[in-house]
Length: 399
Image (cartoon, rainbow, N blue to C red; front, side, top):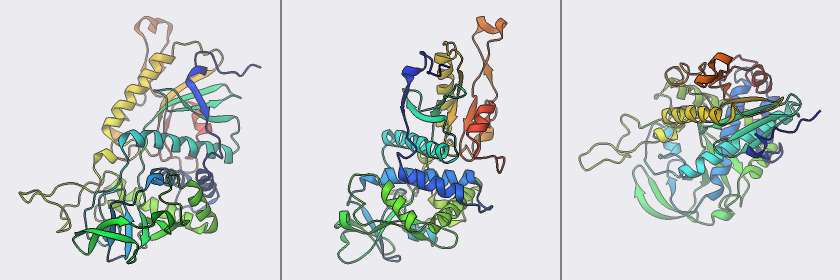
C-alpha cells in the first residue's frame, strides 16, 4: 500500500516536529496525563502546559535592562505585562511597561509551541501513526496520519492566557538602580544576570509560589525548556500547583472576575477602574495605559484574529479542496491553545457549521465544510470523526 502524501500536498508539508524536540513539552504533557485530580481536567492541564512552553521561548532573550524592584516583595521582576506582579496580588497597582515580544515573534513562537505540545501528546498516548508538521504559509499546522491517510491542515491563532514573570531575590548587588516609582519600587539594570538564580513567579489563590530556574539559564539567548524540565523533574509536585493556579486564572478570565487578583495576570485584562497613584496619567489627569490590552487577547479570543483565521480557512479550502488528493482525506480548520471564551457565541458559533462550494459544482453536490474542525485544548468543534479520535484530550469532560 502506498501511503506517500499526494503530490498536490507533499510540497506544502514541512519538517516533522519530533516528540522529544522540546523536553519541557514532553515533561509537562507527561505530568498532565499522569495527574488524575478531577478538579482540573486534562484539557486544562494541556492548555496550562502550552503557556509554560511559550514562556520558555519568550524568555530566551531576557535582557538586564528595565527590571523592576519591588520593595514589598524584595524581588526584582522582569515582567511580561505592565504592572508589578507582587503588588497586583495585594490589590496595589504599580505600572511599569512589560517586555512583550514583538508581534512578528509571537505568532511563530505560539504555533511552534502548539505543535510541540500536540506532538508530545501523540507520542505519550500511543498515536504513533500521527505526525505533527510545520507547513508553508498560510498553513501553520499539518497533522498527518499515514495509516488512515488523513491530513489536517490548520491556521494556528494562539496566545497564552498567562506568561509568568521572571524574578530574582533582590540584594544591594542585584540591581543598578535607576528611576524611582510609587510604593517603594525602582527600575534598574539587573547585575550579573547570566549568573543569577531566577524563578518564574506564579500567582495563586493560595498565595504566590515560584518555579526555580537553574542559575545561569537566564540571559543566555537560549530557551528555558531544558532548565524548566529539570526543575519540574526535581520537584514534580509543583506541576499540580501550577495547573491549579492556571485553572484559577482561566476561570477568572472567562467570567471577567476583576475582583479576583489573579484576573490581572491574564491576557487582555485591561486596566483596573481605580488603580491608585501608582498609575500614569495624562496631563489632564486622565488615566492611560493598561496592564494588558486587547492585542494580548487569549488564544482565539481576539475578534480580529477570528476574522483573519476564518478567511485563512476559506483560503486553504479554495487552494486545496479541488486538488487531487488520491485516496487521502483532506481536512481543514483552525487551531488554538484555548477557545474563544468571550467571543465564541458571536464570532464563531454562527459560522462553524457553514458549508460552501463553487457555483458550477453545486449540481454535483461538491460542497465543503468551512471548518472540518475548530480545535483547542479547552473546547473544540469537530465535524469529522478522525479529529475526535486523534485530538481526544476532551473526552473525559466532554468539553
